[in-house]
Image: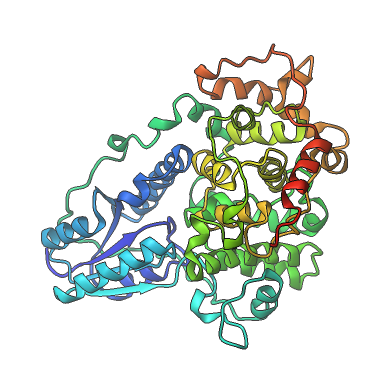
Length: 471
């Protein structure tokens, strides 16, 4: 086939602002785009794995528009790369970096293996605007608190996004590819796939439209309305950032454009992008944030770890009797997403009112969120529980009822998602019963029960557990 270059795709499902792809094209060699369904992706929960497949479908079409192809292989990343190199005679492999500890270490070993066999390897910054090792305190340490981190990076230059290619050099002969549909990445979603599908924003083109629409219409009021769960006042871009259908740099520069135009909510939007960045930096520097308490002093805290506990089941099913919690949990099951204010409420309720371990929530979100992101999910849960970095005071316990009065005083959000609270339930509320597993045996004509844990009693119990403990 002659000398070709392999572009190894991971979570960078876009053609624009893609450093590895740009380098491959500039090499002048024919480019083979390759995605490997390795053990990392195989481990994904139901919703993110399904969303992965839909993203690949759109990426495949994007390459086909340029006359190219997306080659799909399944198995060990190391073995798949060896096979493709042997089949094609490829002399180079390029990829954009990922920062999850296990992946980062594995990629380093693959790079060493390929270079020892005579293959050129290049990798590039990916998923973040600032590489984790480039941001440090005056003492040379990583930042443990968000606000100083924000101040350290807010004035830094972010590289201008790269243009999408207009053409791609093609190999004379293509290697064999798996069929995407044969992977059955939607299998674990079961009947929920049809319910969640209308809520998705798929592919690079749709992501760009979503970004520009947000900047043009909504960012001006973002700082005021972002906490109102009944409004579509957030960017919604987490889904696209997760799979790299848009880059953080592209979002940053559009946010800066809005800031220069005096849009009042633009700085808040930029801060949210940096909050995501902060999560990635912490994951890189303190990888235990993914699997254990970021603050080890919490290891002895008496959280419930029994996932079969009736309170945990009620929480997962949106049947706690606390309307804000239940509405958010049902939104998750119907749309694959959850409003950010809802995420804080359900996390606080699980870890404080129900005294359950944050890992239970982390695992449930990993299975249900189409915008699941390992760094953001882990930091969000640990932030809410008090065991993580830059947390609200651990003794601050959100009252879901007063939060509801503040952010949904007319009950718009609640009635959108909880069928039992209305004589004429919305379609979205009824869809919950179409999406859930049949063995839950729930229906819209069931009575809406009392709170499984009273707000006042739950708060008092949490504070009693905190008493006499040094955090």
